[in-house]
Length: 100
Image 1: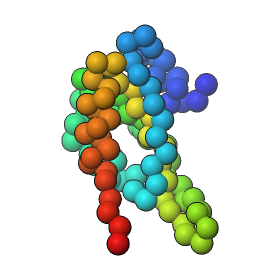
Image 2: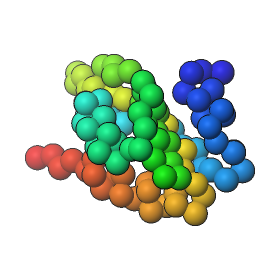
Image 3: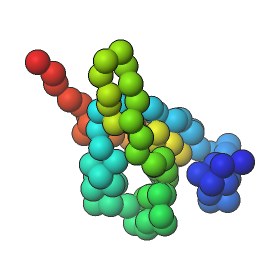
Image 4: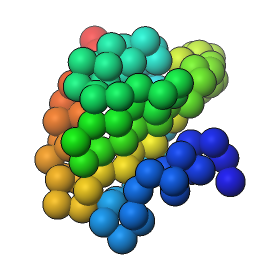
């Protein structure tokens, strides 16, 4: 069991929470940290906890897609079932990026 999964298992009742792992590319870890720190009630290393939710961030890494190299961060969300859709929608909107 990885550290993030172990933390989730210790803090949450799995029947009441939806857990989803997102592979986010092109967004530096510091931007996730800034967003989550503003909303979290507590922070423990890579884990941010708020009312009815917990988010764990992986270490930042580089991933190659063809000739391009992008920063990547795995974001593991654990959110109460009744809050999950709204939380995910708000989270994704905060990290939308346009290209051109």
